[in-house]
Length: 396
Ligand code: PLP
Image (cartoon, rainbow, N blue to C red; front, side, top):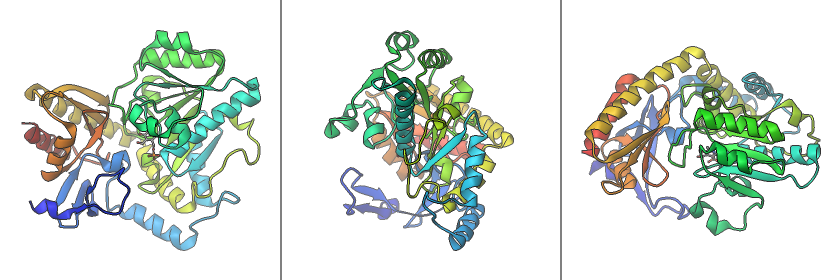
């Protein structure tokens, strides 16, 4: 009962959000504390954002000292932290430039625009279609929403951007049949973060590589949720053998500050002209300085190896849980991004999330009836086991 004291009802936030919101006060390590002083183990990381946990003196110090020095330049100028960050991101693959923005949807919006621009300037007008996959989530601005083919996200906002074709997930034959040179871009997630945690097969990744290369269609890997260590690898596309032209990043990139990146190859950058795209706030010095530190930590091979080892602890715990609980229909996901599909006859994800919260565990939802686990990557094996034990208790 005590925990309920920290819930605010009917705050003047739009009704798109829950009318009962838990009010957090602070965080430390992998724990959050609400305004009533209750503690919560965090299996959600602010929707896969807080990869390094809470109360980080190192990140706070960098942000504070950069705040004193210079907060904003606009994209008419740049700063040393921004230059350092784009150099680090460029070095993660075969990229020539990095566009910085503020959110995942903006990173994808930029990628979709670059794909069309490339097609238009390289191949001429009319080859402008996009292919996206069933169950995808790429964001809520009009372009990204147009390639997010779920009725309840799209319907109230129609008409959307025309020229979008939706293909089934993990169906290489279908892909090979529909893709041709009338497409500008294909956008995919390796693990469908919002759409139920389905994981791309190697066979489908290969088919995407081949089909996009055959027609010179820009392949975009949306790694907003999967990128930078979440799956135990630098990029999930590296792990599954996907060879994207563009990678988009956001969630963990800014250490909790709003920051996104669209990594582009030479062949696109060569066709860009002054003013083709831009962002006033994107990649300001404070976010960039914090982000460079985040990258230094999460791209380190020893850190990634540790994440993979801890993901195995999580995997083993979830498998045991699935053996013991009749409510679990299926386990999905990869690394530290896992899904528990709840049997609809035996439970409801929303109720389980509320129950978990009342038992001191923050956990997320993905898709219709799937619990999503995305803890800070700095969680310990013992804390993973503690969280799984709470899940077992609420599923009992
Ligand atoms: N792409 C993916 C894969 C996501 O998971 C999300 C957000 O959940 C987005 C894009 C949109 O990101 P944002 O909410 O920062 O716009």
